[in-house]
Image (cartoon, rainbow, N blue to C red; front, side, top):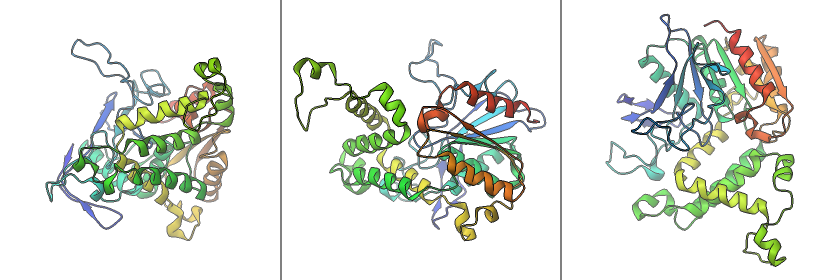
Length: 371
């Protein structure tokens, strides 16, 4: 969907002539009251569920939506009942206008000149898209991690337009430790010799080394210690075991090293470096209580939506303590909120995985919802 009217951003800059990529699932009912917006996290997109088909009508490999276990016919967010919308955020690299696109003002690729975007900017752009679709009020907005921050922001920015919010494995802001992890990942990218100040497109290169390291750092924080020990422990690669220890600072000797390098290599092939910088900064900046002197309850006073909060015991990136902090603030201002803390071993990635208790909680919440 193309938008010509300028979008005023939190930074004071404006974005004119931009596109938003989106997908929808299910059907909008006659009363236009059954729409659910699903917001994505750092490296996801508008492709929430289902698979793409090739010209012969066959499923394309590796084209499954990132939350396909959650969204679809008969699934916890049931598209036989709800009209689900996924929107790719501005600044991303999966179709919506971002650093890889041309600036209509100059005709040049944006690169590092793409303006800083915030969670609030994404919500405003999503609201414009929903208006074009004729949706005045959402039955619910839902997201995990950074997507959960967007869901929370929706209830603050457009309190009359959201009836329910499902916030999974998220937080009201990032801790200093989380900001530190993001900064180390960003430094890996900007110090890559192929970064060229963010204008690497002009040089026909990509800062893949920096992206690989950034992804490796991030991936460590998404998994729990238990999961890493169970999957990899201190296992050596077969070739290393056969040759005994190499005691090399360069060779990949442990299975966990091989796994992390594989994840980094994959990520560097499809993700944009400037997008990584933009999205992690948006994570860092999000802090709705900041405008209220750090008083989260005060910031939540305009909210009218009902909430489901979900956290996972082994998630140390967005720990249950952060969800409980949000829960307390909501209860302080007498919001209608349900909370589930799931004992799951998978760390932060648990919000994307199949856990019977987690799926049951979400399914039950949507089943009880009036559309």
